[in-house]
Amino acid sequence: MSSNLTRPSPVHYLGYCYGKILPAQYRDWVRHDLAGDGARTRNLVRVMIPAALVVAPLWLIPATLGMHLAMSLLLLLPCFYFFYALDKIWRVHRLRQHGLDPDLVHETDRARDADRNREYRRRYGHDQDGHDQD
Image 1 (cartoon, rainbow, N blue to C red):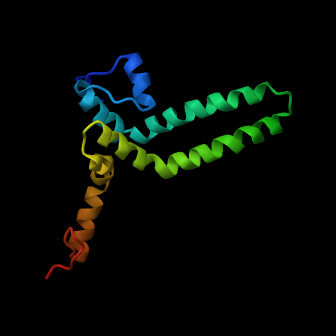
Image 2: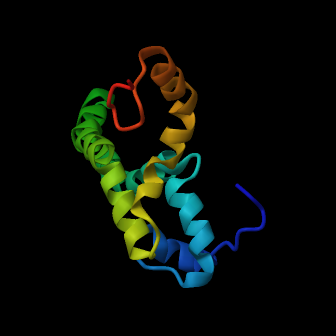
Image 3: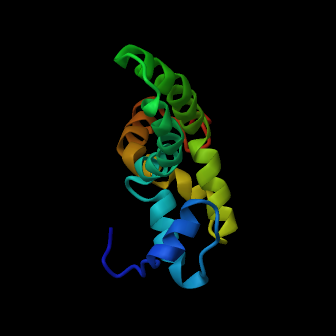
């Protein structure tokens, strides 16, 4: 991440993590956070921390290690599944909330796949819209 981005204060950041809209001065930081390298990992951490806080008290119940793991996984696996399924949808929503282009979510994917797509078009003669070139 570039060091010239204005980072939110811890209080602003905590609010942002769970739905608050940051002031416009943080727009570049929000763009990087939601669409830059590591955005999916950062979002995963933000989702799994509250889930872990819900699961933690279960470990205070007297039970075997296997039972503790079963109880924990019963709650954490669906949480992870829904995170995986809804990650981009959530990040698009957050970009819109902050007045940014929702298509930014796909920016790193496009950059990563650019060479492969260019090679495919060169090899098979398709333009960017998928039509055959004459």
